[in-house]
Image (tube, rainbow, N blue to C red; front, side):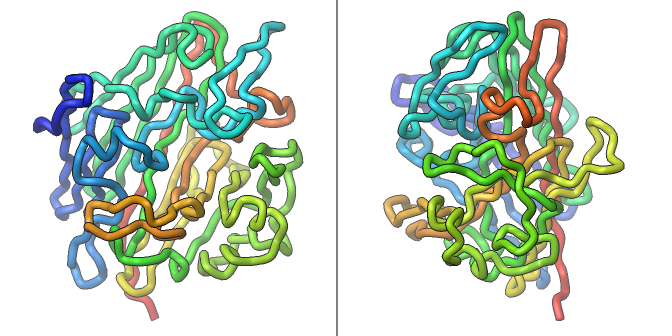
Length: 350
């Protein structure tokens, strides 16, 4: 652990580093639980940071698209910035047009988390008070980061509440397997273990439909490049300016709480591979549509559209308003638990 600086209002922020015997390393800070760096080798054994982000705390305090952060209390969007639970309607802060996104104006990505390290595992904790950003109940959240010897970054989430509420937690890291700042992700080859996705309206709120990917640009059941669909004329792609959609993961045969393979990404030039394993029912694939050359990353290079991708394991967007989606309700006496593993390797290619 080392000092990472102080926020504009004087609060101390710490940085933690995890490293395994293979030399793979992860860095993260207590501000937002933000993962600032993931160093992984290419097929020649050369290491590079593959996670987008900044060098300084001041940049993370400024405007940015949730680089590396824990997002909550409700990750993704809630339509109209409100939901009803047990006959009560809750008004949330609207920070995405008429919607609430990633927890509101000051979500978990902007909070300082308490941290403790035990046997190579770092546990972050935060109490979200009743009424914060409009959400009911005091919510106690823990997020644990662990790097194993098989190059897997494991993230365990847990939460408990003293009043009925809704919870959806994820990490919003952006990756480029060529290396941070090394250009677009168009040639990355993606496989998603999903037969269905949730189409969205003009405000990127799910319509409630669960649609087949067959015959659409959303069919990644067989590996294909991201760029092949990112600029397609499909109405869903046009409305979102690229991929920014929730995929319904295939979990047949898996027990509740059992890890299943959600995604595999292969970058041909470097040979780097990233697999995503999760206990969650959904995965938001976002292809960096709104990176607009206004931010300079740790490499000193501008981030332009599609210079990084995010694979956010989650429950579905707007689930509190969609009774047909898996429930995100958490009640007193229950415990929210979720696990995701980002595993890095290489492929010799052909």
